[in-house]
Image 1 (cartoon, helix red, strand yellow):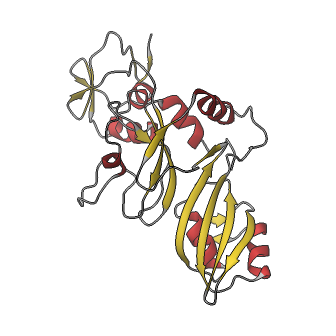
Image 2 (cartoon, helix red, strand yellow):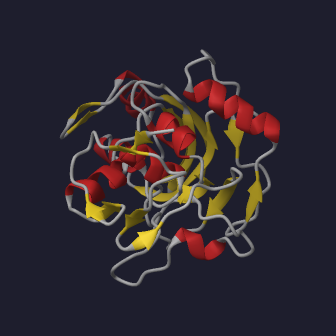
Length: 249
């Protein structure tokens, strides 16, 4: 069955769909030995030889779904030209080639979904699907109610005003505070930038949920496979079936 090349590449776990589109345009993809640059090009993964950067790709026989507790100091990428540690180095024993769903920046810890199900990954990251993510943030200073009100109304960043967040005070010490913040967008370093904009730079940031999926007790730097029920919930949410996210603790 013929599919668009970027969908096949994503489903094979070779790259995200957006990155696959970039690779096609750059001339890094061949079909039966011919370079393809048109994004609308289709191929049959069962019959055609599809190569990405010279490497033959294969559709996975089974889907793999993993939740990783990403430590600080790892890049959310398959490789890094600067030689920094990447999240795939933490997946010892995982034979499938999985890719990250979205990103956590270098200094952020917590829940990162990794899978070779390109359709699910693409759907989860699609801007039309509003999926909540909850973060725990340690910030400099004792956060005031007026700052929380600004976050809950939306904060003006350089690319526009953010969607309203939900914020809850957790605890404080002499010099800093912990807050729980829920966002629905996927802007670059969004939570850090929002908190800094209202006057509270982030010291530590941990993502603890992604939609219905909770990090739970996965140790830092370790991973576990998702259950079939968890996968089904994520697929329902990514398809817009779940109108209200049920956060599990």
